[in-house]
Length: 183
Image (cartoon, rainbow, N blue to C red; front, side, top):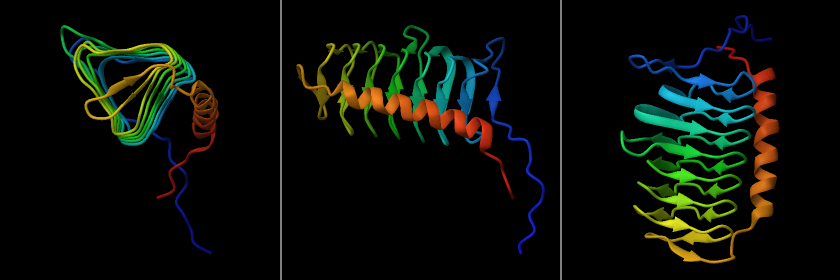
């Protein structure tokens, strides 16, 4: 039998920057290998996964309720344009958001980018590996696909968004209760 040291309390790298301190709801889950810096707000039942970086050093980043920010995502901001993500959103692995708005119940697929002053409306999807350039609006229910992204009206599959939101809210609660480091 392998002996393991006792489980340790998990601490995550959460940093104040000057007078800006993150505000994380007690019902949110932030993985210990995620990094949260400065002016960042994270809502209830949201989850921030390993390797994700939320760097609110030049402006604010806001994450609503029941939103997942998956592994190795990077969220940044500018002094002029905050980064805002609504309730019930899914941000896939390796996503990059900067100075943009993702409205409620939207999805940004793996390795996609949404850049300055762009808006992904409620129920819209940005496909994996797509790039939404500056000043683009992705309408409600639309799919933005490609690099640069082309808008395909009425092509979003909102049932996938809702399913993923539920899965990640449950997974975040499970990790918050059960994850323990054993090394």
